[in-house]
Length: 286
Image (tube, rainbow, N blue to C red; front, top):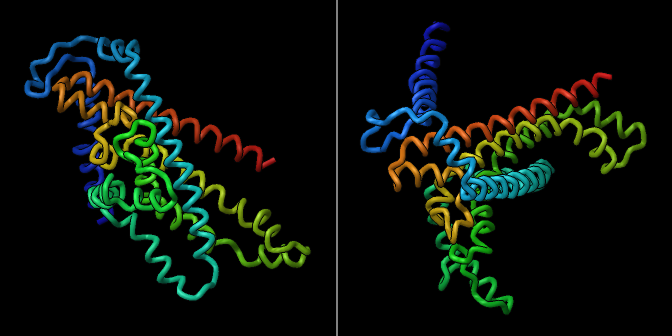
């Protein structure tokens, strides 16, 4: 029976991960078109050369980095604060916890519908709020200076419950003996939290941040459905560019090359994480 489950997982990975990845890697070295993928000619590193010498690629790379940074910092901060809040023994915390997990359960398309309503220029909640503060209406999704903030805010709302739940689990796994020992040593509540709880949480926060970084680099539906990469390219991330190259320009080879470059970005983040984690582990063992 164990071999059955392992075999099923292996077949799934081969069919839906390994083969598409290898296929995409091959396409990245061709000039294949979307409607004639098998008729493309081998062009070597030409697709990669064109991107690495194209300013628009670096613009989308920078947009991806900014979006990822804002979402990760925002989601981790909000998630940790929420986890600490609902870990307290307060009345109704079970209901509050359930309410906070709703965004994580909501499909991305539904998130887009909610925030399209919130950001609506004439009747949206966001503009009603700024009008109440005596400020003029904002084009949240059409103003280049606000587009990134608006999309990132919607993304943070969608993903912060994941951080909250994993940090909450880590909070509840802190040994009570350590808390009691800190009290015996005369530590107040804040000092105990800083010296006992935070070190216990950091490995969990680091792993969750890594996952959030990779997911943010790959985020598509919220960005595309809210702004389509606009306004004026303000939210035109690498993933959005891959879609445009493949399905709007029909350049499958170039889209595949850009996708591989995006994959390399995710791998770079992962390598840096493990290098830092290994360094921290060696330092802690001394």
